[in-house]
Length: 175
Image 1: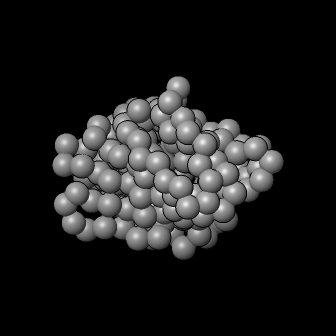
Image 2: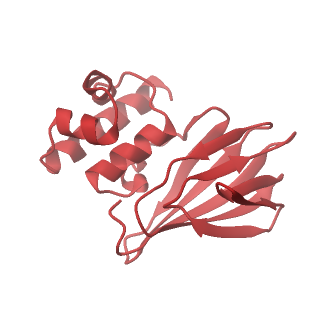
């Protein structure tokens, strides 16, 4: 992320934390990160991973999309870039993302909040996706829905994959 994006994320994260009445120590402990790292992140420093951002959203009891909504740039790491397209306001809450995955990438995502479902549709390239131990190869136009409240993976071979992802936060989800 560039400095401007980190500054926006940091200010927004701090505002969400303060609005929820959560201390820096409480959020850091709940998300499994060092208090000093969270402080630096809120100040616009550091380089959070996607999993760190997910854990922070989960601890703040907000959808991932709400945490990254003010960002105009994509967020990413290690060959995976994600950009929020739209954040739903209904029940259940549905967020839509554009995801690009670099060639020869393997990414295991942490489990999201209970009841969360993910649907991935491949636009270009090929991608293996799904819950750890239960994946499927997808090609352009193919989709897969799986439980995102379990660890899940994305894997490419020798070409880029571009995907549309929708995440549904069912009523019982706390994210």
